[in-house]
Structure formats: C-alpha cells, structure tokens
Length: 253
Image 1: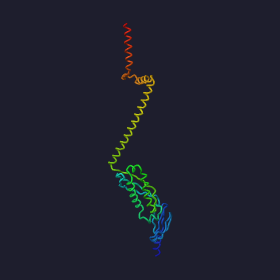
Image 2: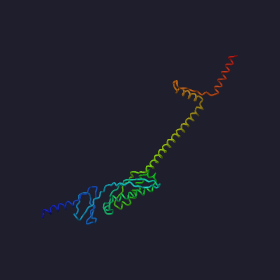
Image 3: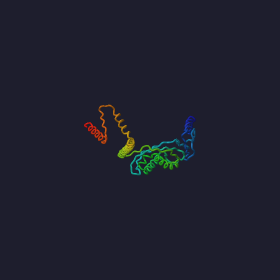
C-alpha cells in the first residue's frame, strides 16, 4: 500500500507547483471563484481545489485584418493595420472578457471602418498617424474596462482599385509637368529681364555695342565655315556713298 501512495503523493506535489515567469502573472481560482494573483517565481497551489490561469503581461501585437471601407467622398479602399496593447490588470482581463485578444481585434476592425468612413480619401493618404490616434482613443475607452492598455495603433497598407491608381498616376504626372512649365516660364521671364537690362546699358554707353560686337566676332574663332554678317545702319551707307560721289567729282574737275 505504501508503495502505491508514494507515486501518488509525488504526482500531487508536482501538480501543486507552479512557476510563473518574470513577464507573467497567474490568476488563481479556488473552486471556481477568484482567490489570488500569483507573482513571478515559485508558487504552490492546492491540488484539485485550485486552478491558475497564466497571463502574459508583455506588450502584445495583434493584426487588424484588411478591411473594406468607403471614405467620406465615396472612394472604396482596403486598409489593414496592427494594434499594440498590454494587460495591466490580469484579474479583470481574465474575468471580464472571454478572449481579450479576439475582443481587441474585433473592436479595432469596427473602429477602423468608422474612422475611415469619416475621412476623405486625400486625408486618408496624408494622415495615417491621425487615423491611428483616433482608433487608439476609441479602443482605449473600452479596453480600460477589460484591464488592458492600448499603447499604439499603426496603419500598414491602403489599397485602392486599379482604375483609381491609374487616375492618380496621371494626376501626379500632370502636376509634375505643370511645375516644369512654371519653372521654365519663370526662367524665360528672368532671361528676358536681364536682356532688357543689358540692352538698356548698351544704349546708354555708345561704345558698349561695338565692344560686344567685337567680342562676338572674336568668339567665333578662325574656322573657315563661319560666316559673319554685320548689319550696318542705312545712314552710314548713304554717308559713304555721298562721300564717294563727292571725291569722284573733285577728281574729274
């Protein structure tokens, strides 16, 4: 008889030992009622009478599956994200909600659709952090009653229909062409202004035009293929002709 009792006692002793890790907390139920909370380290339970539910107290990560939603301006989008939360009250998390992981996931999905439905498509693309903050505020109100603390919510991907992607690509291309045209126009305007200032300076200085002409001719180089055409005012040509005719008359006389 004693030989049989020894193994039984050993099994009972082993079953009464519960080791709780540093990042865990144990919630003990005695005959179905909450009894106490186990701290990290070596703990003992009353076999058969007591049962411990171990809760991870670290920051947990839970995916928000891709959700179909319609923005305020009637643009269909698919959006997903991730929620980071932590159990701060193990007793409440075990007793008040059946499965807090599933509950947070479902609540986050509903909140995500509500927030996206109240924003325009442009705001959705530009203000992901704002979306995450609004969803976090909505979930946190309920999570507190479950003994949880939501630390952050991040939006991962925003997908739109292919036709809308093509339209956005064309719009971006047109915007880049618009900026390039404006930049070129501003450059032409500045060049025209500088040319006008240069012409004004040459007009005020009689020798400036001749100097500029000589510089231009010198810059052409001695290449035989270069042809230089000089524009001479008609008044000068008439004066030269008159002078030539007068010299011819003197020579004949």
